Amino acid sequence: MVVTLPAVFALRELQFLRIWPPLAANSFPAMSKPVCYSTKAFSTASASSPLSASTIERRAPTDKDVQIQIRYCGVCHSDLHFARNEWGFTQYPCVPGHEIVGRVTVVGSGVTKFKVGDTVGVGCLVDSCRTCPNCRAGLEQYCDNGMVMTYGSTDKYLGGPTLGGYAQSIVVTEDFVLRMPANLDLASSAPLLCAGITTYSPLHHWKVGPGQKVGIVGLGGLGHMGVKFARAFGAHVVLFTTSPGKAADAKRLGAHEVVVSTDEAQMQAQAGSFDFILDAVAAVHDINAYFNLLKRDGNLVLVGAPGKPLAVGAFGLIFRRRSFSGSLIGGLPETQEMLDFCGKHNLTCDIEMIRMDQINGAYERMLKSDVKYRFVIDMATLA
Ligand code: NAP
Ligand code: ZN
Ligand code: ZN
Image 1 (cartoon, helix red, strand yellow):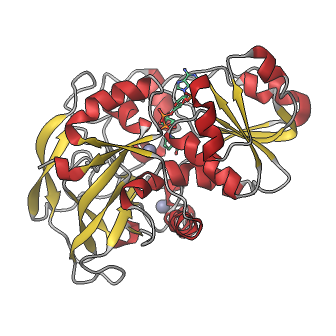
Image 2 (cartoon, helix red, strand yellow; image 1 turned 180 degrees about the horizontal axis):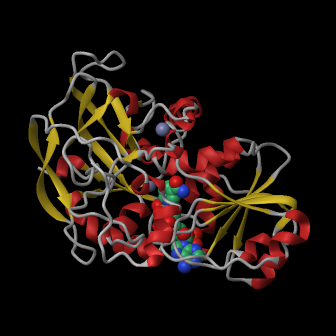
């Protein structure tokens, strides 16, 4: 199905879509509608409505599909951005959720990697073209022909948007299903599927390690995993927060130092000293303050995705030849590598379990930076 843009799209949204490939370029051919089944979910019909109980259709598993009974689903700030159309391209109905873990209940006849009863995960991707250079390199998140995201992409089987993990079950082609480490608590591992890989990937790609001073900005779902990974990779870790009350937790999670970013003197004391900074803030903020903290040739990598642009002053970058980069989740091979790393090092997320019907309150707390440090929905409560 070819994505058509509603006529009401303003230039600003079109510009945004150009830098956001999943919808802009996703133009897989439509398929004839397969056999479907119904499953319970939580969805929203508009940017201003709360999430509420609904019943959705999934395709019955085809040859290469795995059907998963969802046990837990993490709550990412992207779910909130998307449900409320803060990025300007949400199609409704919207079922968020891309930190999915559960048990395999059905496998198609051609499935070779999984069997019924396996404990598996699904992250932000459920398909891609699989033939472009990026897909062939295992970087499906940068697919030239438009990856299929777990929610909000065009569903090539059913038409309409793909529907995410705030649901009792999901059907995913086996190549986009991940194996969960058996030794880790399942609920606390769910957020690894997005918060984990989104922080692991840039730290790994830019080879963060011993001898480097690394900053993590924002102690939320992504940030707290950024702290854990940067510490596990051997760097000296400094956490920047707007919430002084999170300092003790940040140290417990692995930070060597904590800087309250609203305190000018504390920020000044760190000037010019960082090799690498990972910014995981969900709202518009002054990014220039962090350029000033980088050494010569230091790199600030943005993973946070606020709905409005960030202002970038030239001088913070051109003095000391600093770089400003971005990074999007991770591909399937790297996500499995990250999960295996977490299994080996006994790394999970710090979570607060909620019932499905607490989701709207959880979003409000997320907006107040009041999450310690990831909400995870117990999907058994969606009965
Ligand atoms: P989160 O749990 O809500 O954490 C965001 C943190 O940012 C807050 O806890 C807070 O930390 C800080 N913060 C919030 N408002 C702020 C403000 N006005 N100024 C400065 N700091 C502020 O969100 P998340 O789930 O970690 O997601 C973070 C961002 O990453 C979101 O925009 C999300 O969409 C994006 N994301 C991107 C990718 C990707 O592939 N690039 C993947 C997943 C998510 P303190 O209290 O410590 O200041
Ligand atoms: Zn996410
Ligand atoms: Zn591709």
